[in-house]
Image 1 (spheres, one colour):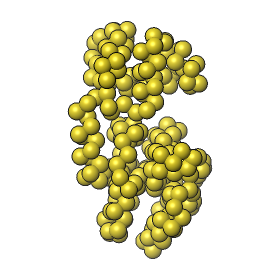
Image 2 (tube, one colour):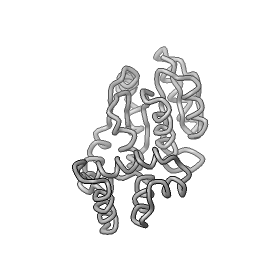
Image 3 (cartoon, rainbow, N blue to C red):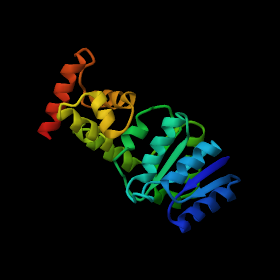
Length: 213
């Protein structure tokens, strides 16, 4: 397979590339930051993208954000996320599409080379591979629907609480109105607000949930 690998640690990136090469795969790009990852993935359109979570320029969840951006441009992109621990921000958004070709493993799993390569094959073939600790943490968090919102969705909801329309929110965040509409629909779904209610009523209920937080 043709694979893109992203990790800001040169040692870890080279180690993963060595494992993949020994298994007969070709690493077509090895990068160390989120911006370059997006560029390489969309340029190469590989059979699999493997990315760390914490990378420059933010040093926080840049890898996950890059993965979400790649999926926005290339919905079927096969992505395997590797992390030292579960980073919840953007994880729901990445996993929510349900189109397969997604994996989220803790880096400890790479130590078991057979298990890691099995995950590589599965995700590249359109499967979903989730570390048991990832599943446990995300399921625990879903007890609080508001906590499942991504940072961007919280930002949109906070603007809604200020009484701003979708158009005004789009202008403030420098995004399209369509993007804001997608965020609001995800917010309504995560807060389990009924589609049978009017949009205005759901906005009020969403804002009340935000203010109670």
